[in-house]
Length: 270
Image (tube, rainbow, N blue to C red; front, side, top):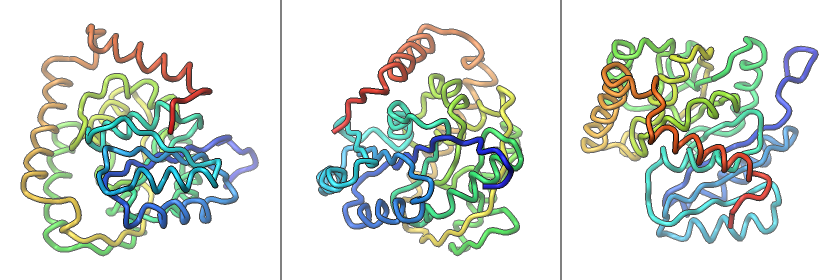
């Protein structure tokens, strides 16, 4: 780590997983080996997998005490999984990373260095960082550019890439923001980042290495739903002012999250 004082005391790594039977054990092994010096807690959130992902992680966790599995039954979406994983995280810094190894967990220490060096609250892995090494198809690049322009126009976020599945948050950011998050599937990253920015938290991008295929989890229906979710976040933020008011739903979300945080020492995990 950079600097004389270690600012990050405990790291939690949350991995949302849906039907990742083929790769999940490799992901966990790579996470443990590449972060061995940090000794993080690793929380896999099974989002209703039907291919045996849950059972594989349960068996793995029996031999690896720093790995836990959270499951709630039924597919709820990646945003819901991320929110659920945070409820059981004990770290003062929480990383969210995809389960498919397109983004290797060895990149997390670099993001931790950025967080400490630049004294920021959120570090976002970015394909657009000048030091990033990326390999992904032209069509995906075009779609990414179009979505970046839309997000910049709607929310004024100080980042050029919001969709990479590797992000690092200080705990207090998520405590403040997650109770307000409603998106379960497509634009949850935007909802979290836009609210963190709105509350004045400092966000910075870091370089990444990524190699992905366009066919992976992307289709026209997903793109359309992403646009709908993004529009809904804008409507709630700019028109309804939902995030600025203590609505009954927001109050209930805060109470539930508070209860989860108080009970985190005895998480209900399998």
